[in-house]
Amino acid sequence: MQGLLRPVCCAGKGAFRTWSVQAPCRLARMPAQSHLLGRRTFSQGLTPEGLPQRITNKDLDAWAKDVRGHAYSRASVEPYTISPVRHFGQGAELPGWSAHFLSTSGLKTSGVPNQDSYSFTTLQCGWILCIACDGHGEHGEIIAERVSRVLPLIFSAYVASQGAEEALRQAFMVAQTDLERSFGPMQVYSGATVIMCCMRDNADAIWCAHVGDSRLVMGDLETGQPVYCSTEHKAHDAEEYKRLEAAGAHVIQKRYDDGEVVSRIFIPKTGVPGLAMSRSMGDGCLKRYGVTAEPDIFDITDSWQSCTSPGVIMGSDGLWDTVSPEEAVSTLSARYRSKRDVKAGLENLTRRSQRRWIEAEGDYCDDVTVAFVAPEAGQQEAGVGSKGVLLLSGGACIFLVIEHNRNRS
Image 1: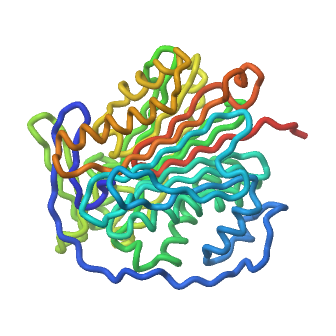
Image 2: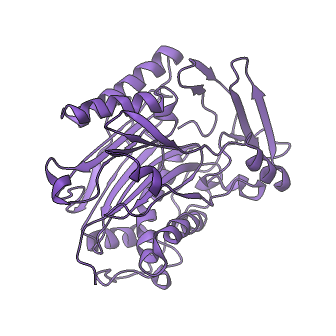
Image 3: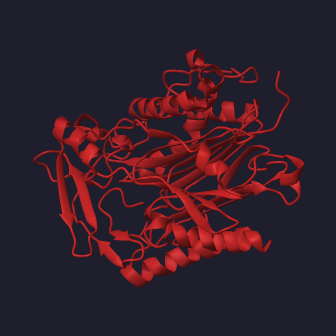
């Protein structure tokens, strides 16, 4: 992820924009934690009132053991290696669905780990949560893993009483508070971007929410064409700049000859940290200067229902700096239509992105994460899950929610 002090490029233009800024040294230590849930189980569900003020790793493990299945990735270090995964219950197994995940480290400074993290969760109430996080900053991998684990827990506490849209909003805001309480020193100069998609099992209501420069692209896999693309949160956007300016942030913008605009956000009179997006999780040093964790939330139901075979691709700069939305949708739709292995298509997109990073940068390649979820062959007609395919990819923080078919009272 290029949120802080990393090269910036634009897919299709071959133009990599580099900003070189030195961030201050910070003490690297794990936060003190207090286990508040004890032996509580979550079989009857979690409520907003039941959330502890400080969520510990023991809390997360206890919750994960009570849901149907939970799996999350751990950071790998060696270049181009696949991140290991920890499983609870049925893990990432999803009856009636095909689910594949791939997170690979890039080529960076020696010893810098993969700062992407993903998780996949099936709740007892029938919701399915898929999250991929793209961290940035010195402790980006810690922030990303924390966000990927705590978001589904918070969402599960709010969805029954407040519905998916408000549960998404609360998940972001409470997760930010969690970072400040439990990872205070680490989240000051580190953070993560997030893109979330919330879907009912019959696809009659689909929402996306995001902070940062991660993007959602919806495509029709029958035609191979994108039908919807979300926007990035950048400081040079008029509305974003207005908020940042009112809060006193120092924003630097530069327009290149090819029309690309690059912007960075700094604490006034310091030259740090040079954040590339105007909204994010973490990045505590810039919260008072207008860099908010509040997500934009959109109803994308009509776009989904307009497709014969809808699919969603979500990613950040690990993917989108080298692969365009049109190329990603076209690549996967070709395999989908010909009934070839889509998982191999994800691997091809990953390797293609890595190759283009090296061709352009020589000694740098960003982390790339890809996750794919789709009904198994023959299940779509049988009514298992919703019609369509979901792909989550590339260095973003992505949150997908799908609800199982089940009898409703």
